[in-house]
Image (tube, rainbow over the protein chains, first blue to last red):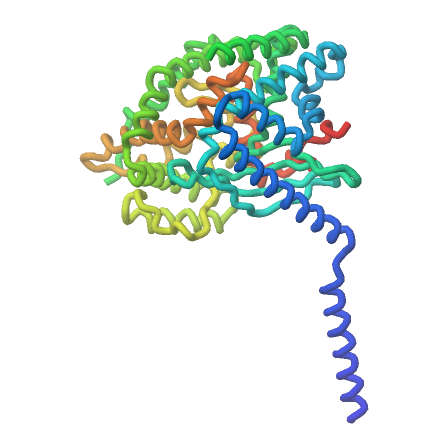
Amino acid sequence: MVQLCCLFRATIAFFAVFILAASITVNPAQARADSRVLKADAFILSLINDIRITVEAATETNDERKAAINAVVDTYFDVDGITRFSAGRYWRAASDEQRVHYARQFRNVLVNTASRQFDQIKGLTFIPTISKVRGDKLILVGGIIQDGTGALPDVEIFWRVSAIAGQPMRVIDVEIENISMLKTQRDENEAIIRRGGGSFDALLQSLDERLAAMAKQ
Amino acid sequence: MLGFDISLHKLYAMPLILLISLSGCSSIPADQQSDSRDPYENTNRSVFAFNLLTDDYVLEPVAKTYKDTVPLPAQTALSNHVEWVGLPSTVLNSSFQGKLENATLASLRFLVNGLTFGLVDLMENEDEPEPKDFGQTLAFTGVPEGSYLMVPLLGSHTTRSLAGRGFDFMFNPISLVGGSSAPAVRRAETPIAAITFRSNSFNVINQIKYNSIDPYARTRSAYYQRRTGQLADILPEKADIDDGFGAFFE
């Protein structure tokens, strides 16, 4: 009877240890995913911090603002990938000259637009929430943008970060309330090209006109 | 007392009548469309231009004045009220879609906040229900999305979401409640909702309006993405493992 009891206790102990071991043994793939998420979270917090510093510091002249924005963009964003993707399916058919022209003007429009919105960024706070792994190349870093004055409702935001093994992390998109800024830009660009009869030059001309209008404002 | 305010439904029908009269319902050939979901693009663009004009002369200035002059607590109260008015639709449609937890959350919130006509959010720190509309219920039952429609004054829709909106409006229990001052109150709901929406989205809408090369295409894209997000739990097959960014890495 004592032996039976000991055997029973040993069996229970074995299963307890087994269950405990199973519960603390992390799946290697899961661990890798978790470490990528942590890295992406830290990457975005660093970006937010740099944006805050930029907004607070570079407010003297428009050129100063643009230089500061360009520095942040080059450090944290996959500019080449964003440029390529934003031109949609027409990128492949574009000539080298058209691509260079587009890349230059697209960046100019983005930086000009961002520099005009400095005042709107002030007073906003980013509160991290949940981050998600998407496939083996993307991580969505989630958060809430809160307006310190309470004048604007909270906004849900996701930073889409490319996280390819062996390559530095880069932001490729910002998604606000389910709306991807990059996809919206691509759809707009494709619409302009299609309405221009499929000509990439129609997009280039629109960008040139937009920049000229911005310069006059 | 229950009543049915016919004039309100005429009011709702106005954008539809305007849409039909503007359109002539002519679709354009597929090779001339900038998006395959938008066969009435030329008409839609005309309606969009009309909506932009309305925004220039009415909504934007009113929303700006509202933002600048109405105290923040009052703005919050009105936003809360607009949300509260939509809760019965969420209750109905969550039930239709089998999302009983969401229906319960919305019912509770409607009842509790009803003590202040929705002006004060007494359940601020509780779980919030997800807004559900009849357009989503139609999607749930397998009704196809239809075409993209830019509706006068109401903005972006698909055929399905517009039908859903009509249903939600007509069968929202609040629109059936009567009383001597009820019609006036109900008439005020639509402009209040429009102004709070425009005010809460002031910078976003102005960003599209003033900083886009093609504001129409940008609006359409944003609408479809937002709607896809709202339908994600109903139509999970539309969700993509790489969120449609596979081409980014090619």
